[in-house]
Image (cartoon, rainbow, N blue to C red; front, side, top):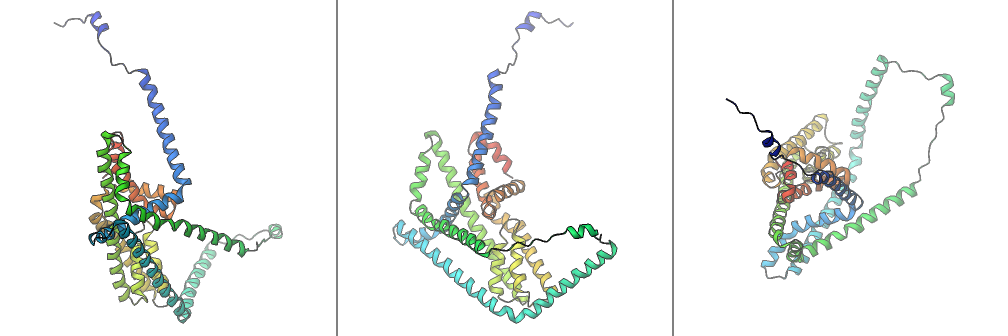
Length: 371
């Protein structure tokens, strides 16, 4: 037989009461987090140039770090090894620019020889376009403007001030080279003061968090190094295959265009378009329509192969980012920093995931970014 509950027991039973101050704290914490995110985004937007230069310098320092370590094994001081590594990089950069300029000059010199074929190709495309336009107009008659509207039509042609355009472009180019000149100096100091910077960064944290900070910095360094090495290997592989296939197709300067196309293919999302432009422009006076279709198939196939096979093989275990997170990161950083944002989006997001994974309150964000 069931017994009735004692009203006193019911009244004295403990209840799960949420303190009112904790309920008030949640909206306050959310508002503070939103304001902090907006402040960081605003700082990244207005400090675009110095942040991009700093991040590019960090990537360059990781690229040159193996050279510095090799020179140190030859009993050279670290500062001297870092200086030699930076000078070697600048020498390679100048040589690449010189070779590129010579190849471009040769291409421009040979271009008039094939101008007739280029005009024929463009003429065929123009005639096809005109035929399509005439067919469309025969099906959909064009509305003739009224006489009064025709009388009111006024054409205004603004005169182009070339001096202003040249002055603005010269100013932008000068600013770019001025900012870019900081990159080798920053890379040199990062290489020569690497141990000091890392230990000093760890000392910025509290004693109980220093070990976590040390491990996190080590994982970020390993990730960046793997990201750079993986991209270089993928670029070299795609460039070598592209060079061989472009040579089979009879493309001029295939030994030069192939590697340019291979490394341009590494640019996220825009890689297919950028990689196809150099061989298509070079083949204008040499290839027929079948050759251009073959170029597009080669570029598209290699890009998809690299994206689905090579990238997971060389970078998947280090980055551990899901495709949605990568897409959102590319969209955000591309909007914020343009082309450089697309290039830096993946390492920035991967570094943020490593930080999130090692900070207890932020592990949920790391899980969201992960696979």
